[in-house]
Each structure stands twice: as C-alpha cells, then as structure tokens.
Amino acid sequence: MPLPHNPVVARGPGALVQDPGSGIDLIPLGAEIVPYAIRLHGVEAESAEAFQRALGVTGASARLIERGDGSDVWIVANRQQLEATRTQLLAAPSALLRLAEEVAAALRAYHCEQFTLQCGSHRLECGPRPLIMGIVNCTPDSFFGASTAMGAAAIARAEAMVQEGADIVDVGGESTRPGGEPVDADTEITRVVPVIRALSASLSVPVSVDTTKASVARAAIDAGATLVNDISGLLYDRELGAVIAAAGVPVVLMHMRGRPQEMYQQAIYHDVVAEVVGELRQAVARAVDAGVDPEAIIVDPGIGFAKRTEHSLTLLGRLSELRSLGRPIALGPSRKSFIGGVLDLPVEERLEGTAAAIAIAVHAGAHILRVHDVMAMRRVADMAAAIRSEPRGSGVTRYF
Image 1: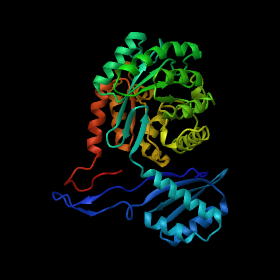
Image 2: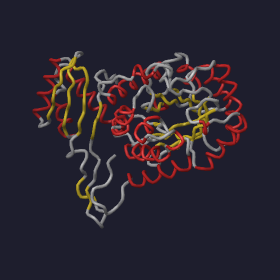
Image 3: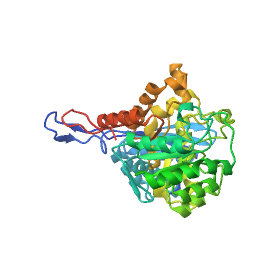
Image 4: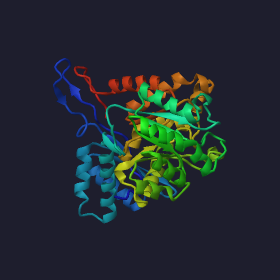
C-alpha cells in the first residue's frame, strides 16, 4: 500500500525474558508490552490532532511537531494499543484509518527478518547469517587502490574472495568515489563483461554487476550476472529498471543524491535516517513501476554517498529503522572516509574501523555487507551474528 507519511519505526520490541539456566520463556516482551516509537511525517493538522486523540484513548501517547508541510506525529505505543487504535478508527473518516493502516504496514515490514533472493540458479537466504559481498573494482582509480584489478587479476581476486567466504562477488567498471570521473558505457562493458563471463562459469556464488547504466547491466546479465547493484536507486538511467525486470534478477537500490562529482553539495538533512528511508521508498516505487518484482529488491542507505561523517555515523547507529521498509538491507561501509574522519587514518589503515561498522550493522539487522577484506569481515560478521542471536539461559535475549 502507498505510505505517503513515510512511517518509520524508530525502535521496537523483540526482547524475550527467560528463566536463566532453564531456557524456559517466561515473558515475551515484545508484541504486547514493550512500546514502539513510530514517526509519521507531514500529516495534515486536523488529522494529526484527531489521530493523537484516538491514540490517547488506548493509553498510547503521541506528540505533534509542526513542520512546514504538516505535522510530524511521534507515537509511543505497544502493539495492543496500536491495534486498539486501528479498531476504533474502522468507522472513522478515511484519512484517519489510512494513518492507522500506514502504522500497521510499517510494523509488519519492521518484523520481516528473513528473505529469499533468487539469483539465477543461486538461492540466497537473507536471514540469521549475514551475506558477504566481495568488491572487485575493474577500474584504475578506486579510492582504495589495493582493491583495483583488471582482467585476469580481477578473476583471480574474485576466486580468492569466494575461498575466503564471499557469498556474492560484485564487479564494477566505474569508480564512484567522491570526485570520480564518469566513464562511458562501452568502456565499462569492456572492463566488466569478460570478467563476469569467466566468473559466472567458474564460481559457486552469484556474480553481481555494479552499474547505473541499462546497457552495461544488459551486457553483464547476458554474460552471466544475476544481480544488479545500482548506487543511484534507478535515478540515473530510467531504462535500467526495465532491463532488471525483463531479466528477473534482484537489484540493490542504494540511496544517493546527485552525482559523485558534486554529491556532498546535497548532503543537507533535517533527519538523515527518516529522509533516507523516505527516498528509498521512492526508489522501491520506481523499481516496482518498472516491473521489478518487489521480492527481488534490496535497499542500501548509501553510507558515504551524499553523506558527511556525522550522517554516516547516524545511519549506522539507527540502521534498524531501515527495517521499516520490509526489504533486505545491504550496507557498504568498507574503508570509507567516515572511518578516516573518526580515526584520522588513511584508507590503508581502516580495517579495524570497518570491522566496528560491520559488527554494529549486523546487530542492527543488516543482511548483505559489501566489503574489500572478505576473510576478516566474514569472521567479524559471523561473530556479531552469534552475539545477536538467541543464546539460552542468559536472561534478556534477542532484540529483533
């Protein structure tokens, strides 16, 4: 359903109280007891006030914050209160019922934890164990020089990544680093297609193409790519969505503003997380309108793309809010400038900073992690997932 007020679940239940030692579930804190915090954006003033009153009847609380385009409605309520609010609004004016339905839709999405992606003959399970996407840069000008490889060297690099634990190999032929110069489609095809053709024939994992261009994606898919990774969220080339839909392959829709050459000029946010969620919702709508199967869509907040250090840190700290979209979450923090901004280290010395970002992302529910250092980040992700999962006999346990 359309969600015009961009509902975002800022936090929610999921903890489970157990009798330590016995493993017996005592109180499922989640669905009924622990409150959610949910924000609706741009609600017309009269509807916002009526919705606030309806929530109050159930014991829930709501605060209205006036904005230029309406009111933000912040709701603090548990599931029983939200369901009671929706029930009492069934006979109310349609605008009020729609607000309750938007909240319900966001909650359903928030609690989607496992997804299946069909990448050609490969079936990827996005769930308890995070997937590692290894980066293969077939470019001469990546921001991390050690990650660049062309031709046979790129093939060897990808094969080594699979041995190290990569679940997906992502091949790109155009650098999207800040200030990077664009390349034409023919150059990009020349760089990536031979590599993808060789890898699709030899690897036991899916091969992805990192591109924003429809013609490059078409050539890569013809060569064996079974996933498309688009940093523009289908904004740069409106034909790309149709190519993806016709091929029936999954797509990563990343959040981005502007082009790499000037993207920081558009890094201006009031609430970076809510705005990223809203703009990713628009990207998902573009993909669906182009014929892409909604079940084949992955979302990526675009760490470092049109985001300054503080924006990237905020997105990582509140990454769980992207679960409001109800799609698998991909993330690419590997060795990026926000790590250098915090630690004051060059790109070659950002391994530990990347590991911290990966661990936080896994705990928040990220499904796919795009990295340069596969072996190290495979271990970090697996350890973080083990901590996040439900240990027995430890009191309060899992949080999503």
